[in-house]
Structure formats: C-alpha cells, structure tokens
Length: 176
Image (cartoon, rainbow, N blue to C red; front, side):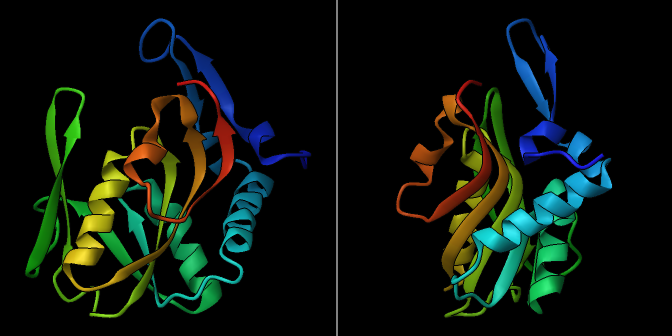
C-alpha cells in the first residue's frame, strides 16, 4: 500500500543493538516496491540541477541506491569497497570506528582529474565513511558535487565532518 511519506516505510526497532538505541531499518524501504521507488525518485529529485559526471556508492547499501540513480541519469557508477575487495590498483582512505579504524578503497582509475562526483549512501551517522569517500575523490583530482543519502541520524553530528560539502538527506531523524 502506497504511503504518504518515505519515512512511513522505515521500521524503527527500539533497543537495538543496545538499550536506548532506536534503530532505523532502511531495508524496510527496500522490501516495499513503492518505498524503494520513492527513495530512488527522492534521490533523483535531490540531484536536480547538480552537474556531475560520476555516481559513487558505498558498500553495500550505497550500491543498492546508487546504481539505479546512475542508470536513470546515464552516468557511470564507482563502487567504494572495503579494503582488499577490488582486483586492480587502488587508492584507499582510513576512517575511525567506535573502537578502531576501517579502510575503504576504489580503483585508481575510477575518478579522473576534474570529474564531478555524486556520493550516494543509505545513511549519515557519524560521517566518517562519507568523509573518507570525499578524500578518495579529491585524492584522484575529482570534485565532490553532492552527497545524497536516504536517512540521516542528526544526533550523531555526521554533517560536522562533511562541512564544506553539499549534503542532502531524504529523511532526517533528530536522535541517534
């Protein structure tokens, strides 16, 4: 059944993964054909008027949301993977996790100098992964034209790490 707003498709699971956390489950959007269509249409609307060459999506839900956007707009798609998953020469960026660090990478030839890149993901939480993606784009001489996400957990202050970039989110939750 078609729902009025995109956030109406999101299931909230209280106390997951720990007490006090309200987990916002993006997979409930994907499981509903109308929700999935509305999310892709929302991302396409968010990109109206943005000039860009390439869509970049983060493993793994950024692939799900980014590839239909790239397809619909006739753009190429660059997958951002966890370290060690890509077969050719790569560039990588580290980012902080709650307890330690992680590393992402893209193929070295994925972004060409001067490319304008849109980065798509399902969620902004602390902003660390998206910040690392921006560094990868810039390391290869590209420019981040826009960051577009389906959901944002504003209480985790991820936008702070992304100051200086255009960021759009379809749904914003004030809490964590």
